[in-house]
Image (cartoon, rainbow, N blue to C red; front, top):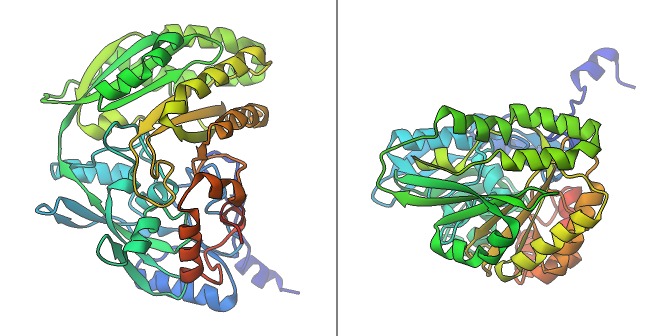
Length: 442
């Protein structure tokens, strides 16, 4: 038996994700300050028979990063490593937070082409799970990768691009942590530009009837439907000449507080305590919206602060199946006793060539459902998932779902290509965990 001193020295600490729905108790936590230290940590873990997982800021709702072995925190591996203006690329360390990257790029007059709606994740965590925004022509953050390096199970550093180890590059841009630990990423960037956002309330029937038209006519189109109502809020982002004209204080309050944070937190807490109030709250919240237009640099238009914690499920559907699936979701909510206080988010993406991207090989539309943290979500998510899978949906790798390898092999034509590569790079499953066993198989 360990002595008290030794027990204190080796006391395990519990890690939990942002939403609080996933916890893990690793044998130890390491925070390497160099790639060499990371290589040594991987080699040592492999020698000891421990599994290794890297974790970013914990914004995934799945156990993709959970481990009982060695938990790697890459946050000390951060910052821009190089900028190649001629090639239009920037190379960053894997632990760089998207917020810091966006601000640093803007200071140099550069920008990513597209991004998701939050920027609290590390670049490696966001890309490895398939974080995306919405776009007619521009795809996920992973699709903007032009090169990367990762530490493999034997402790080597492997460089990947379209020209160097291309078969690994095709998969590792979105690797769910199964192929190695990413140490640096080279992104395509472009000169800083302006986006003009137009937000407009619109009825559910109209926005679904005109969905294809809105997607075709706008570079970035998305909308939110408020369950228990026939109301939606649409957002169209398109490039413009500028100058910057950010939202005024009133409209900024509506977006940042009523829909996203302080007031939204209060109404969700009320809805959790008294579910019967949710439909009335939804009607009031959805009617509080009014049309507005503003212009700013990309990350200030694409992203918003998110302080209200929630649990989320998102499925990627063939774009032509979106409207039918969403109408089925609305009908299910309308006839059920469910009380849903969070809007349902709809976005799009063009087809890409990443092996396990949710948009791999097909034009895609996304439906995301949310529930306030601490509210039972299983009944809603189970019913929604039944609809999404009936339409050939692919679950977001970092969001709640119940799919397994058998199902996923049927919706990803290149699934076997990924698992064969994993067998080659990590035959002993140094980077394995229970989640990967479920979604990728043994």
